[in-house]
Length: 172
Image (cartoon, rainbow, N blue to C red):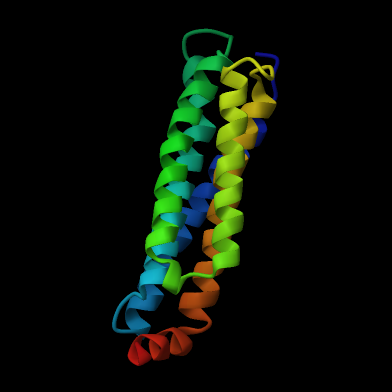
């Protein structure tokens, strides 16, 4: 093994922390309000899915190291590309369904990042770029960034501004 995979372990560790913070946020919001706003529920789901996805994607190359000293990046990128395709479809669909309760600028940036990361993975599968740790890491890094964005948006909307969210629901 001549590749530096420590960066993937670091992403997995930080993603575990984000998933843990999601539990704390759930407890705090559940005690302070009567329920979840649909936008906050979408942010929460996105944070959990992207955090857990980043953990699994970060640890997937180590499965290949169990039986050999070589990582087959084409297989790893292929699995990640198929997953990112489904994940991207899911989040874009979620954004469309919850567009009244979300910030459209953030949703557009997140959707653009999802499509870009998925396209990069598929370009490696099609042979347009060489499948290696760098290409794979771009997909994992997207999941990590997605989890960071969802965490920040969830904290700012659910914890720092719970009264604004509650008053929006009352007006509707």
